[in-house]
Image (cartoon, one colour):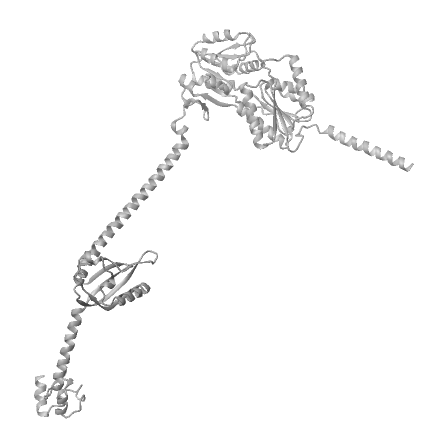
Length: 577
């Protein structure tokens, strides 16, 4: 019994839990991404692959999404409704989509243009229930279309700025009295006609007429276009088939339309600019695609669809074909500010901007290098001139010096000598170049020792040595030698001076000999001989003088002469001296 009660209680708990979960699921009907990291999105297109507007939308949306979610799988389907739009075909297309995506539903869908949008609304429960839908390129949007599904569907309305384009056309062509609207009989073409009719009241005094593919064949439309008066302008909205019902690609029919027209043709889509349309405030698949992708990204990142209202302002921009501006004599200055102009000839600078700037920078760098080189040359020339001036001064001093000056390498070989050296050694300049320093020393060993000392100490000053000439003549010289070093203190040679003191030594010896002779005479004469200063004090007195005056040798030095005179001579001496 107790076990049975437990089973009943467990059953009631499961039923209650299921009921709560079910009610919660029913309560939250807002569409959100099924996974925090989106895996795939579906782009459902109204038209076929190769249709310019559709191709640009798909390319732009995919590029923007993959930039944020690189691993996102973007799947693309085409309804091809420009070519076939029967109910049987649509039923088969629905069956195909259910088969392909029933078991692998994407995180969300993007639908492009009116036919895919209407198809999605009609079959939302079969295809998209539970995940969001973003539409783009829809011309015929009314808020009632998504009433009750504001939390599931949002998007961007496509609206042609026919009124703004006509305003501009009238300013550019003030003589205009007639406006011709060109459109086909497709739902899109009829929507454009309704937009044009809605702005007729803004242009009182203008005559509006319509070349409609619902009433005219393509051939008839072109014929009427050729007959337009010169005070007209034309606006091409869309033409992919005429009354004959044969689909015609843009690239085939649009050039024929602009070539047939004797007046300027304005447009509603930027793709028309490649086919002879002047321009206008145009719808662009590129800008629509970017705007739609931003809505998709907001949803994929978790934002509620109900918080993203439908964008009712179409992201249109003023765009023009430069070639048509030139053809119709329209100055660029008369266009709205910020207008985009395509097919404008690119200047050499624009087409080669990278190379121009690279060349300019290279030229500037070369200029800087040339200036630096010129400055360096000037500095070098100035330094060379200073060096030459110094060399001339040195050479003058070197050559005119009375002392023998020489320069030798580190091996002791003479490199350069002045004239005084040649005269001292009695040799020619050619002979001296074969000699070493120790070859001119009387004592060669003494010279080597001297050079060793100079290598260590850097200099030897006033070293006295004997030098020999070519003929064997010996000279007494005071020698000063200094070491020559490079920038890294490595010995590279020697330079020095031989100062000949032979005559000086001979003169000094003669003077010493004369002094010896005088001293012998001074000491050996028998009479009084003395020297005194200007004050009459004895400086020297010979031995006989000391003896004659009664003094011991040396006692008279410093005494005055008057001190040793007899009194009778002193007064007379002082009068004289």
